[in-house]
Amino acid sequence: MHAYRSHTCADLSKENVGDKVRLSGWVHRVRDHGGILFIDLRDHYGMTQVLCDPDSPVFADVEKVRSEWCIRIDGEVKARDADLVNTKIPTGEIEVFVRDIEVLGPAKELPLQVFGDQEYPEETRLRYRYLDLRREKMQDNMVLRSDVVSSIRKRMWDQNFKEFQTPIITASSPEGARDFLVPSRLHPGKFYALPQAPQQFKQLLMVSGFDKYFQIAPCFRDEDPRADRSPTDFYQLDLEMSFVEQQDVFDTIQPVLTGIFEEFGGGKAVDQEWPQISYKDAALWYGSDKPDLRNPIKMQVVSDHFRDSGFAIFAKLLEQEGTEIRAIPAPTGGSRKFCDRMNAFAQKEGLPGMGYIFWREKTADSVAQELGITVKEAQAKLKAGEVEGGMEAAGPLAKNIGPERTEAIRQQLGLDVGDAAFFLGGKPKSFEGVAGRARNVIGAELGLTDENRFAFAWIVDFPIYEKDEETGKIDFEHNPFSMPQGGMDALMGDPLEVLGYQYDLACNGYELVSGAIRNHKPEIMFKAFEIAGYGKDEVEKRFGGMVNAFQYGAPPHGGCAAGIDRIVMLLAEEANIREVILFPMNQRAEDLMMNAPSEPQSDQLMELGLRVIPQD
Figure (cartoon, rainbow, N blue to C red):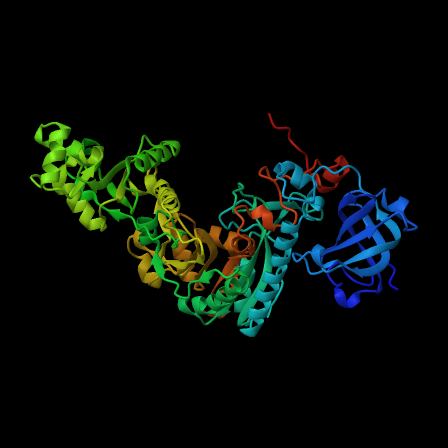
């Protein structure tokens, strides 16, 4: 018999009754039922109940074991009584009577329990991650991650992509975030960098004549943490293709991701139609470049209804250049209680409030106020049909702008009795983010968001440049290596009108994919950087390897990268990306388990020619 096991803890069934077996695993829990000890023995594959009574020669040894001890047992498989069968586990029809036991690894008092669903502080979970990972949910998440990566590889191979590995240590190359720098021992005073992405290398592969490349690539960025982003490193499906246009990239990655979400999405519907929405429209309709299309709400511009109106705040605001008023429709949200909740939401977001109108059936109170009669008299007139009933608009805004304007707003937004609309104004970039978050809250609270589907959308036509309102300087707003739509001719006009062949894929409110058709022509690249204030010498210095390569027959090429961590996070129905990463950092970018970052030894610093300057 094998030294540690003849079967896993998920293998045994009624067919094994009478067999002599050997199992190894962890003590999930121990139960004492009238002198008979029951142990749920767990390994990576499942659970088996083992038992021991005073007749066993090792009963005294079994009495000593505690939760999470690692043990080996030898025993005989027995059938459970029919009324004791556990249908929740594959081995629920049998149990193993212990004849021998060996403690492979005793455990100290546990800082967190593996059994059960207790919640523990994140600090505890990360410091003892090896225990946290023993929990069933975490085991499932990590197996899911492994299976997703395996399936992605197979799907990419099936499309004739070749998998190559690019360098992990390279030159610093800004990608929009801070680099992690690595000092060079052989070249004192100089530094390597961990790659933020394999961007330049994968483009060089296309210049080298490789037609379709992919890898599951580690990427390193010194970023501020968020729930959906790691502060240090992450993995992405990185791919690049030669002789392609934007639609070719879409047609390549869509079946891969559709298949992944159908395979691992737990039965949720996966949208087959992926709309292409311009960056401009996404900001207008959804207040985000990663909209959640499970929520049907679309925001609209309603500036004309407030221009020169009785609502002075919006009317005066619209006198300023570049301002507008947008409405967030809220079907079924037509109650003062809900409107007050959304107003409180806006205040938590740092705004003084959020204007609203809601539509309701005409009430006796409003009729009484309108006609200057008592409520009782108004009730009688409504009942007798002497006063026309129907719909009325309510809320402070409705009173200020009057019935004609409120009715025009209602018709534009397609709203009815029981519905509401919320309003925000100013320069769009100043309020779009809050408007987008308000849209999400409204959709969730009113039950409008379909939680049982994955909704995808390509966000396209990103602007390449933006202007600093204070300095007037033109700089890159998005990826500087994207091919401008219109090529060199586009760069001769207004920079703020230049769009790039750049695209993101949004799913359920998260950015899953980002990519572009690359600018492979040196003359267009130099001009693009010149507009943003970067001279030819600086471009050659910072991106010399790629610029030089483009002068030797570079093919048109493009690609994208899909975030593995976020994909798994969505499939696992987790709200925090750390739940699907084996050994994540905490919110302060610290590894509490391995004590990183740590202070270097003095001899390490001397060898590298470095000195640490104390911070005040």
